[in-house]
Length: 84
Length: 363
Image (tube, helix red, strand yellow):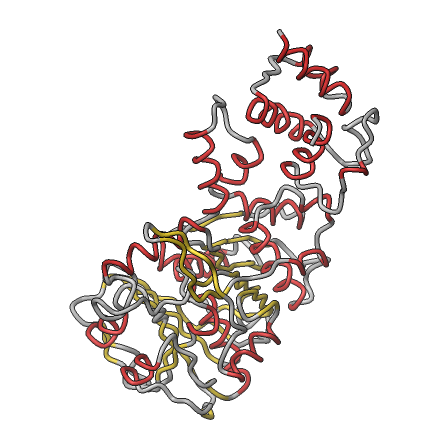
């Protein structure tokens, strides 16, 4: 499973997105908005899950807002942190 | 004390979802067979269980809204919505409504997961969703939010006595005029931690009725809710709650002296085969139905539902106990027996010689 697929699986499982499949989440589309109904609580949940699964910490909104935009930005954030 | 009319009932458990499936299980004398796997030090074992399916909640709550609800909350919501639906009060309710939720264990699956993650994950904080679901009044609060009710909302946790305490509180609220209606119910869920606990008790002989015998308690979970209003002002579809009494047993509890049938919350835990005959004098016919809904701290809520169905149906259902040893000990009637219009009592003994007794009557 690629990093992006793993991220999608975590989002589906941990945020309880019933009836959503991996292929329903496009790499470049916004995660937060009407399509999946995610909100600020989900953002905090995602911060927790990133730390738990990848050991990567989002410290504040300045880091979090661009990182949590899409699967592409999340994957890039994780790879950058893990490489540092 | 004020009397309360039962105007709606909502039940979900191992027998299925809704009053009609509870009736069906009582008439058949059994709920569908289910089992759970429990991890023990000697390896996995399989135990009989009566677990509840909350899929019908989709009728009442959108996928988006129920996304964050754990199984415990879903049980509570389903029981509550079914009761309000039954009372014709889901969409609109006259006056002010209070919500009281009784539970013995609370959201155990979620809370065990949350505490486990705090102690075992390499993260310095826990899941916010699991945290929010672990707080004491979460399920009752979700009910209030979804129903847009601004009346009092309370969770009661007094283990075996939770249901009697919740009903007593409901009667007080109605008596004070604090609310016009109360949605009150009991909820408990099964989780692996409780399965492990049951096996530990079993190993000590405590979960079985007789020392050294296998556990008689069938694992149970579910929710049973009621809509209550002041009797006299409203006719009770399912009869009237005449009284709720609680206390410590003074040596030996004088049972009801009116000769009316008594439903015992004898669920196979806490040595109940010895304790009920030793502590209580009962002259009327006895019924035990824990074989239909299983062993759980809020079992008395299911007993109350069964009592209400018996009273309004004019017959005491055949007992469905966890084992034939119960039938012999209590002399449980197997065929249904006709009930004279009158009263029916539900008695639950607590784990430390406390008791809760409900008395129901027809209108």
